Amino acid sequence: MREQLARDFERFGRELPHDFADYVREAYRVDLTARYLGHVIPHPIGKGSGQLSLNLEQLETDRAAGVAFVVLKTAIAEDAAGGRAMGAWAIHETRMRVDRRRAASGREGWTVTWKGRGWDRPFDEYLALVRAAADLTRSGELVAVPSIKYHLPRLGEAFRKPEYQYTTERLAEAWGSDPLPTEKDFSPTLAGDSLAEERDQILRWLREVPEQVRGASHHRVRLALKLMNARFDDAFQLQMLRASVGADTLVVFNRLWDPAAGVAYGGHDLSDRNLRVLEAARQANLQLPPLSGTGNICSGRHIVDYARLGCESVQLHTFFQLPLSEYPATQGSRPQRALHALVFDPKDGLIAGMLDLEASGDLERMGGELRFLDLPGSADVLPQRHEEHEESAS
Ligand SMILES: Cc1cc2nc3c(=O)[nH]c(=O)nc-3n(C[C@H](O)[C@H](O)[C@H](O)COP(=O)(O)O)c2cc1C
Image 1 (cartoon, protein in one colour):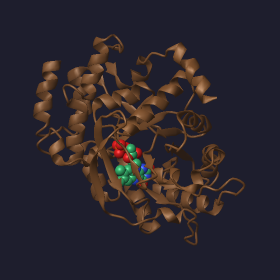
Image 2 (tube, rainbow, N blue to C red):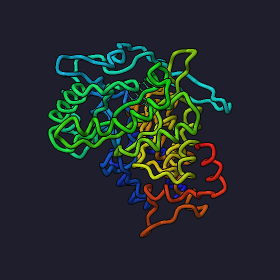
Image 3 (cartoon, rainbow, N blue to C red):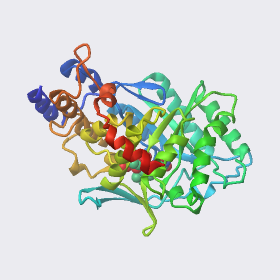
Image 4 (cartoon, rainbow, N blue to C red):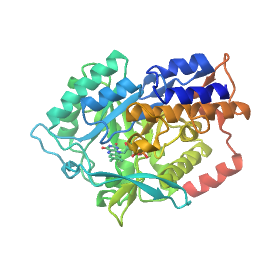
């Protein structure tokens, strides 16, 4: 199998088959089936919300490449008169820079430097994109879902229901069938904003936003909360997870905030923190909604790390926008080249990672197959560390 993997890596670097998950199942008896926000998907790799999911051309390229799911750029909620409490997030900014970034651990990684925020065009244009995303989703070729930043009040202030109502109703109409899947973004710029200075305020949002969104429309909504990395410690991240149990899925966790530079960043600091908090949640035996991982996923090994800590899918942004010279594939679109490296790299790819876990006795074949969705069960929980984390979380 290792030799076959080396051969497949070589030939798929020239052309990745669109239905590579079927091929992987047949050739390696590895079942990559995954889940995202109630959808069963052929493999776990999706595209996170952002600058790479702004238009139909990008969606079409992702569909052709075989990306499993895409979260559209975050739009800002509005009421019927166009009022937007979170209007400061509708900033126009096109310049993005892909930079090297050294983490506190000394490891070199990548980060995208960008000063923009949410969708900056009219809401009607966003709804047209949502209609196309719903068609693609129903065709079974690519799950593509909207993402919204709804009003977040200060403590003692009420939620602006008209924004929740108008936005959710319009999205549901555009989606055209129940339930409407959507993410609610808590972004790093929000984490860096004075709105997010108070812990109780953040916890209230996480507890109350799901009911606000669900109560806003007579359509059914399936809601993912994309949690931010707040400016507090790991124990507070656990409190945030505990407060978020009303969501249907949790996306864990959006980028870090650098207050000095006034920008969000990723790289290994981000994945180190995310994985550390997810491990603490596991040790504390938190009962959480299904998880979708995000943050510095640049190899199949990272996918395995997030999956072993409970993530049923992963969402990438940075790895889909590296310089072409960084991908081992020589042909194909960026998403094709990214998928090729993530899945087939003979050393660091997803298949290699799962075969290694089989070899070490951590992952067993079921009915002859290694299954991606069995990965969460393959990580041990150490009771001693459980106590430590409980203490620091209290
Ligand atoms: C330029 C840029 C724009 C982004 N915009 C959004 C956004 O509008 N909404 C959102 O939920 N996440 C946004 N993200 C976060 C990504 O979806 C992703 O969760 C995060 O970057 C971590 O993954 P990565 O390390 O693979 O980039 C953005 C990220 C980048 C780099």
